[in-house]
Image (cartoon, rainbow, N blue to C red):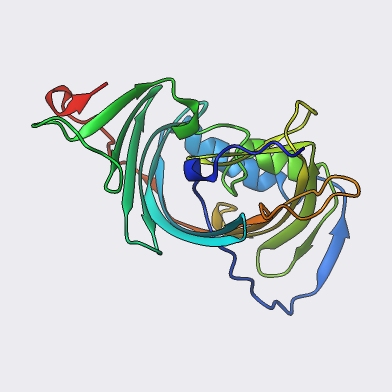
Length: 251
């Protein structure tokens, strides 16, 4: 039986594939992704930030869902330290916002929240489903890019790198879909990805189609795919992400 986390806990976003005509070169070496990984890690080391917009489409139990999101990431030497993300459900217009500062998370849910008077945020500690992880399938995640570099991919003129990556497991969280490299009960799958990078080797755009495997001889249970399209801008930003005032939060 497949094991899937609830899709209500997910984010990240729909594919809009471009028809490229540039000449592609097959490679199994990491050379094409090494400069990208290094450029991202330099942003981490400088503790800078980036803005993003994204769109996701998924299918679960035969139902299509579409989400858009936008926000900011602020870095520490080890990766994303703080983030501020707003997600909008395109079906019913509901909004979900979450702020992460270190291991603390703060959420607002226009669809389900019923907060005490004077409170605006729910406060969570070490709630990993909201937090950035080096296992996220994301074009600015060195952990994913290192994995992708270890499997076949192609490069082409114009700063486009693309490939197909297989993993032992996939887990859906609010922060995004995470890959798992060891078999631990989650169903594995395939990630077809495409990354556009600028002259400075920093990511500009990331597409991914994430498809879960069917069990041998099994049938399609409806939890079929997540498709994501994400744009990055204003690399090197120095904005500040702060936790909401404590008087406005409830545990």
